[in-house]
Length: 511
Image (cartoon, rainbow, N blue to C red):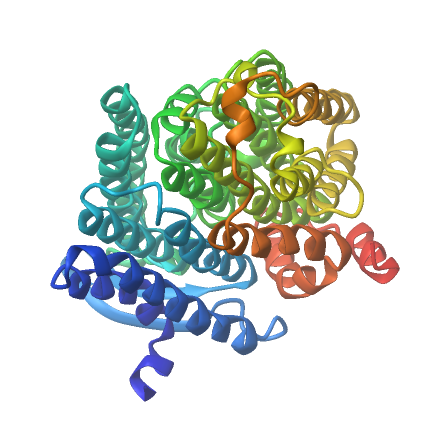
């Protein structure tokens, strides 16, 4: 246990993979219980990150380092700050819920299924803790493999197409990032005498940043392409609706809950501090793209006949807020952006889980097939209502806090685009509440719907933590801000933009 305490990040990263390996030796029908137990253990251990992290201490904590490929300056280096801490906790929090939600929906090749889920958790956690750019790339690519098989084996009718599209989009963007990583390592050798892919070493590399196609500008675009695909940012979003619709429920939950956050986190940890002048140069370009994503995603969601596709396009819209918050380049916008990543990682997975629960009962996701569900599934209707209100950013829910801060920060950066982005709040309410009304209210005319059963105990256990989190994050956001605000300030300091006044005022008001 002493070794685990001193290598906590390594333990949290690889314990799910080791647990999965042991699970392959167990009988088929017991693997899901083994996987669930392992995910609970990892979540409980991850709470040590919260209790042990000191926001007034060093910028990066729980550091671990060992030589890996010394000839290329590549090290096994791990660490975390107040931003990555919350994303790691989000990952470990969602994992047991995802596994528990699959108990009834997955009955074929269960051992392979739960092994892939745990392996995917290792890849996601590793990406959040990697302090070496090459190590980050390894984990980034490692995530693709289990997700590819989860979609390709347990997905819908067009699962192969969706899995290939997801894989190709992500791979193309990341290969350019790999080229940029080795270019930075070579520049480190020219300037300091040795190759290094360590993130903190690369922060010191000086590059020409004057102009859109300067050295910084081109390297920034190489990283930004990989991250924009993962967000996904308009017009690189087309893989997401296909992946969501074809993926099993667990795949959609992980995509929305964690994998999309890799894009935002990549901008925060790598693109912004490595290329600060290029970020300032491309600021308004990304503000425009983010604003378009918000409105476009909402408009397309509004006309979707499929519930899952509607929620998928809502992700395009919501992650657009993350982009404009980050590229506002002020503290209030960046803080809201990080918080919005956590919000989206709670609210949208809840919606996907509930769509999956309906699908398990009726084997259709078409909105027109439902209506009057409240009469036979009252507990489900209440849960769906809370998640819907969170998604439309009702005051008192988590969604309101994140979107309010982002729009306030965006208004300080570009009032016109902030007004355009604000219309997305209205459109979001339209498509979400309209879907809720068509599915939950009205006459119960379809005889198939009259036989639907309300939430089981297992399903209630899956949804309750998410619903509670939506309210807690909406009512006491300072609990989360106090651990992340110093890290956000450091991020903006590296880009030369620090504006703490508005955020400090909000914290004092407790809003």
